[in-house]
Length: 120
Image (cartoon, rainbow, N blue to C red; front, top):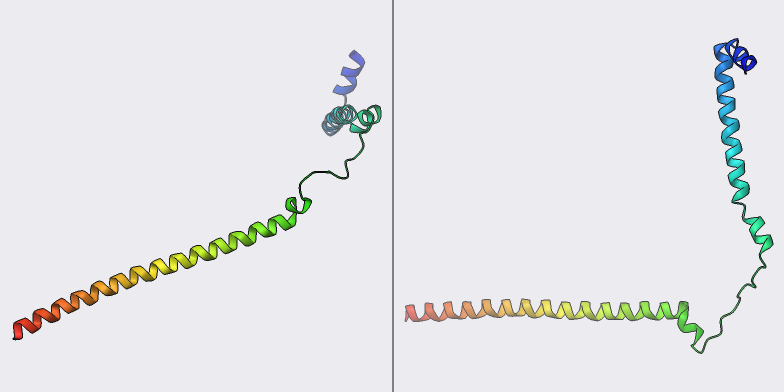
């Protein structure tokens, strides 16, 4: 122990820094290597028997109803519903505008009657 201490004390500051950095890298590298070997999935995969890959699922349902065709149909239905809602909103807006116009016409007719009465 005394030999190592005296050897370390005789080193230059640059050599001490290099030794400290090298030692740190060696310790961290060792820890990473141990962690990688412990977490290696290949060793556990080799010991366990592999399960066969499922390639097809058999169901009583129509497989097209579960795929892209079903999504396309849903999107088309949503677009039709949106179009119908936009048409309904447009009609309601027209009805509101017609009501406002009719109210304005009624007010003008009243004013016209009042003017006729006042002139007569």
